[in-house]
Image (tube, rainbow, N blue to C red; front, side, top):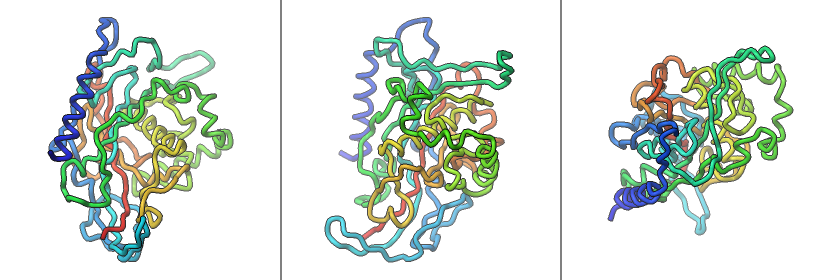
Length: 339
């Protein structure tokens, strides 16, 4: 039985188990979504560029962070070995980003009732109270293990592919740090240093850099055109639109995973022999591709960098009623020493 078939059987079993808890309350908001079709909904050109050492053997118009210069690498895990240094982008994770608690767009729009009321999301419009003029939003994220290249067996026995099965790895509805800004400060106490106009003004440069080329990793407190990375939760104080707001939420969540050592570094020379701790996330390691409600499968901005502008590539890809629940495929930069 192939890894793809095993993963699909496992996914269907999980969905059937979850379906027994599906919410039937008529007053609950409708959850919308569809399963990701790996053929038509995935931007396969986002795999590239493919490099050997510092040489791009399969170029791409999309920006790519630097790769180790030497094509020869050596590792000792556990036995010493010499190999070839390769760099590529892998679809490694899948994420739901929704304001509706317990809504899973990437599982076909299924809704799960845990039996208790927790983790409510919202979208609030402008208010005149205290002179506020910006909309606010609260998003939830569901993080799936989704090693698509391994399932598809594009290259068999390729040591660089993550060999795992489909799984729901994290849901924010039960995470108190995701609900409250004060509790979130437990894992990002440095946020107070960047809560000033000067630090936030620097994010304008990150916005331009992320849109034109690559985001600026030294400005780790910025999410470019989307806003500030802090606090590391789904409370968005300046929600411009669903696409901008949801991309900020997933950027913060990815950073949160790194801060909690649940996501690791895979790029650069340190990633050649395995994953490594990266408590301050390098934004250049990720690209996000929308797969729900409307997949982006072509064009330079189909899988945009963290902080890149959402105009015009994602314009019109969120719409009222049936297009408010977002899904993203997370592409991860991988440098690896291949035998």
